[in-house]
Length: 139
Image 1 (cartoon, rainbow, N blue to C red):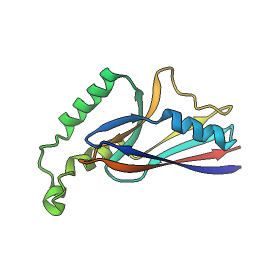
Image 2 (image 1 turned 180 degrees about the vertical axis):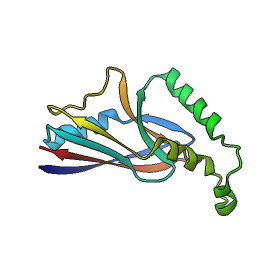
Image 3 (image 1 turned 45 degrees about the vertical axis):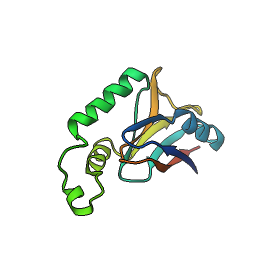
Image 4 (image 1 turned 30 degrees about the vertical axis):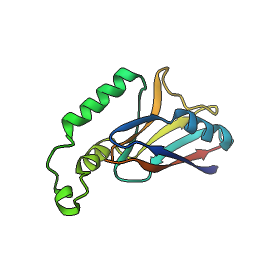
């Protein structure tokens, strides 16, 4: 049993910036030498999330619109009253998505659907340097 940990570092624009990180995750898996197991993808921080979608412009726009409906930027948030940083909505959005996903690893490949990609969503109200941990566990 092997455990390989890789890091992906990237700069985001914030404001519900949706980034396809599938190529970077696939490269981490490929270079790990692990062929059977599980891939955990985790973003550090409480204002970003990791999930999968069909990464195409229409759905990216739909997803941004959805988040604006469920946790609007202009909403009232207790977090903002306490910290005065204006990103209460980002915390609510990120917690609804979650900071990690797990993907099976079979024959050295992640069995993603034809149009399924792993994405990072940075909900914060400013650009950030984000770090994503990819941990591959298996044989």
